[in-house]
Structures are given as C-alpha cells and as structure tokens.
Amino acid sequence: MNRRLQTVIALLLAGLWGAMLGYFHLQSDSGLMERMEATLADLRSTIVGVRAPPDIVSIIAIDDRTAAAHGYPLKRERLAQLVTSIGALKPKALALDILLVDPDTEEGDAALATAIKATPSIIAGAATFPQSLQSVTANAEDPLAAIPEAHQLLLPQPRFAEAAALGIVNVATDQSGVPRFIPLFSRAADRLDAAFPLRVASVALGVEPLIESDGIRLGARRIPTDTGQRLPLTFYGPAGSIRTFSAADAFDGKLPADAITDKVVVIGATVTGGGDVFPTPFDPILPGVEVMSTAITHLIAGDGMVRDSRTRQADAGIAMALPILLVALIAWRRSALGFVIIGLTVIVWAMLNLAAFANGYWLSAALPIAAALPPAVIFGAAELWRDRSRARHFADQSERLQRIEAPGLGEWLARDPAFLAEPVRQNASIVFIDLSGFTGLSEAVGPAAVREILSSFFELIDEEVQLLGGAITSFMGDGAMILFGLPEPTADDAARAAACAVRLADHTRSFLAGHPELRRRKIGFKLGAHCGPIVASRLGSGDRQQITATGDTVNVAQRLMEVAASRGAELALSANLLNAAGPEAVPSQAGQLTGPFETRIRGRSGSIAIYTWRGETL
Image 1 (tube, one colour):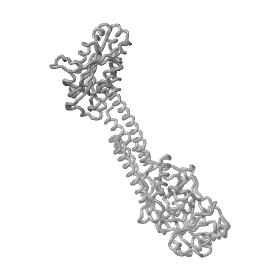
Image 2 (cartoon, rainbow, N blue to C red; image 1 turned 180 degrees about the vertical axis):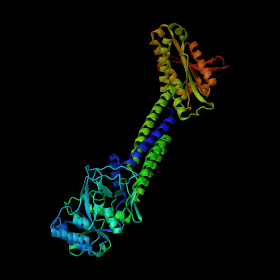
Image 3 (cartoon, rainbow, N blue to C red; image 1 turned 45 degrees about the vertical axis):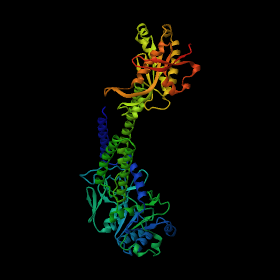
Image 4 (cartoon, rainbow, N blue to C red; image 1 turned 180 degrees about the horizontal axis):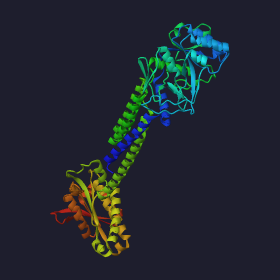
C-alpha cells in the first residue's frame, strides 16, 4: 500500500478514535477514564500547591478537646448553647453539618430548635442511593434529568426542619474515596432538595438558586456545573486551611468576634474516630466539615473549578486533534529532530493543561492521553516495523549490489552516490584471471554443470579479492578483472595486487586439481598483472551502470595473460608492478619467479619488462 495512503488512513483512524472517546466523555463519565483523571487531578493539585482560601467561612469543630470537656456526641442542650453563643456574634449564616435525625430529650430538642430559629441557620440531611456509585448522563433539554434519584432521604426532626433551611450533605467520591464533586441537588420521588453547601450559600447571599442547563445562578453570579449539576471540588490545602476553632473555645467564650461576625460559620465534628473524613491530595484525613466548607467557599467566592459542557467540548476537540497531530508528526519525520518536536508538542500540551488547571479550568488530562497514546504507539510501531523492513530490504539490495558491482564499491556508492559520476584518472593495479580450455568443456558438460563450476570458481576469486581489499570490476565469461586502487588509490595497491595474483594461482590450481572433470580435461588458467594510470568511470545508461577501468594499463594487464600462457607460466607480472610491490610480494618458496624479460605486447608498439611465475605442481 502507498505510504501516503497509509498515513491518511492512520490519521483518519486516529481522529475517529479520539472522536469516539470524546463522544462518550460528553455523554457520561467513564469509570476507567475517571480513575485516570482522578489521579492526574491529584497530581496537578499537588503541582499547583496550597493556596489561601478567601476569608468567608469559619469552622467550629467538635474536636477531641470538646469531646473531653463536654462529651460526644454533644447533648442537644449543649449543642443549643453552642448555637446560641455563636449566634450572639451575628454570623451571616450558621450551618450545622450534623444529622439531627433521631429525637433527644424534649427539653434538649426544644432548646436547640429555639436556638436555631434565632439565627439564619441551615441543617443537614442525607440521601441514600441503591448503588454506591451513581453514573450521570448529560441532557441538555432537562438540567435535572441527569441527577440520580435518591432511594431514601435521612431528614432532620420536623421541629428542626421548620426552624432552619435544609441542605443535603452528600458528596461524590471517586474509587479511592477522594471527594471530587458536590451534587448541588438531590432528587427523590416527590421532591428536589438543594445540597448543603448550596443552601448555605443561598442563605448567606440572601438569594434563591436558579437552575440553568449548564450551571446555577446565585443572584448576579453564575456558577458553572458539571454533568448532573455537580460542583467540582478542589482543595485549598490540608486540614485547617479554612480557619478552624474548637467548640470548646465557644463554650468558654473565647471565640474571636472577627472570625464569626458577618462570616459563614459551619459546625461539624472532627473528633478522632468520628469517621467523617476523606482523603485529598493534601491530607489523607480531611474532615467532612472542611469538605463542605470548601464547597461553600467555592459557591460564594466563585473560585471553584470550571468543568462544564464547554470544557468537556474542549476536551473532545483536543482528544481528536492531539492524536492526529502526533500521528502526523511521526509520519513527517522519524529523526532526532522529529522526536524532539513530538516531545515538545506533548510538553506544550501538558503545560497548557496544567496552566488551565491552575487558573480554574479543569480540562481533562486522561482523555487526551487515552486518545493520543494508542494511535501514536500503534502507528509508531507500524512505522518502525516498516522502517526495519525497508532497512532489511535496502540491506538485501546492498548485498545484491555488492554481488553485482565490485565488492566494496557498493558500500562506497551508498555513502557517495556521486562517486565516479565523472571519469577519474588515477594510478591503480590490475589483475586478470582466465580459465584455459573452458569453452570446449562448456560444450561437453552442459549449462547446469558449467554454472556450478563457474559459481565455485567465482566464489574462490571473490574470497581472495575481498581478503586483500581489491575490487572485482567484472566477471567475464570464465575469468575476472580485479582492480586495486578503487575507490581511492593507496601506497600498497601493487603489493596487494601481486599477492592476490599469487594466491589466486595457488587456489585456482588446487580448485582445478580437486575437480575430476576439470582435471580429466586438463583445464588450465592464466593470470596477468600490471600497474599504471587508468581511467575509472561508470559505463552504461542512467538505469544500468557499471563501474569499470579503461586505458593502456588495463590492456597490458589483459595481454599479459597471453604472455603467461606462451611461456608456460601461470602468471605474468610487469616489472613496473613488481618493482612497486617489492620482491617480498611474490614469495619464492611458493613457486618459481623468472625474469625480467623484454617482451612485446599484442596491439602495442614497443616492449615491456615482465616476470613470470609458476607455482609448485601438485
């Protein structure tokens, strides 16, 4: 398949994958995705760090000191005293994060009802659901349709409900128990109740909440909400971040007036073993009363996280765009620069996501990761596999090139495609080898046997030439032309050529003697070797070219094979080659070196000095 088409298909699939995840993200919360998002939200909260809350809410804690002095749970008379002492300092609203479901003594209940009625107060109720985890689904037409319906409501005694406003204290936690949302409304079969924080905020501001499709309105302030009219929670810090005072100080008259007057005051239990605690990114045991106080502060100050349909739509858009971008970058360039750009893209996205979170916009981190990671990994792995396949293909082609072209020159051509694009004149050493009497053998034994013999012969030549660093520029019928000096001439070209010629003579003699048919027909061989200036070039058309050498030096080396045969020798070397190589290049103990002789070369005027060499007969 065409690479461009494969990339287009990969981009489409990446976009569709992101769009599918984005669609489900817009419709409802995915359990796995929300677990990932919860972990990443905690990480971002930790990075952003602790922040000071607005001075709106004060907590009066029924703590261990209070329990030690006045007992726990507090008797209704004691609780009435606490409410009265706080009410005397004129709070803007007094909220009791305590379930007053069961009756106490008549005197105690009556005293508490009277105390509550004297101050703008809110008391807590609770809802239970048939499932511990309630899923919510977006519904733009009915903002209440996504609110889960409570199985049962735990409401305060009627006398308390008549004396104060009611708020439901439920929180929505993730699988690890961290409070993520406050459901701002609780729906039962025949009623709709505001959440405890929402009711406190409405009493403190003196306005009734108005429900909108994607939020609520408290007077002039609009509070964006998530699916199911849920308020996202982010915490200011560990326990005590919101100003907290012991109820024992209230009993003793030691509460500072500025912490109560014109403030929202929340009474709740923090006593050890009370059970109303939650893990948060900053504290593993944040009291439930501080969770409620955090939500109240968000609603009054408007400093909570924005996670509504618009942010979810932005999430869906990013979930589509990021995988497409990463796949496109992988397809564009798989180099160090390409990987740096991919890494920078991911870093920029992460920084923008963190910056948005720090500024109060809860964009999903889990969704883009889930959308981008599988397509990027799969496409990257596919491209890596294809690159390796191409590398294997090119390696195979290179190997074939090495076999077709001169060994050693194919690799040089791969590094320098312009090598010998123009003819080059330089010094080199040339060796020719040819079998004698092979034409008659070819007619007698047939093409299959000829091919087998020549293949073995050429392998022998190839091994010796590669051993000494030469280049076989061509195989010619039953012989070969070998060149020393390409791709670049060196000082020992002549020495290596002479040594190669002698080694070829020895191994060819053994090869012929070891083959019964060649020995029976007395097939022989001859070699010629010479050095001097050559013209190295590429010959052929643009589609098929061959590297070769031409010039008088090449012609003389080829004619020296005739000289060797006419003198009953295996090898004829020019004096020029032997002088350049040195006498040690042709070992005397391996055969007989004779010369120099002056001899004429067919097709060339004048004569040259040569040596002949014949190895030991087996």
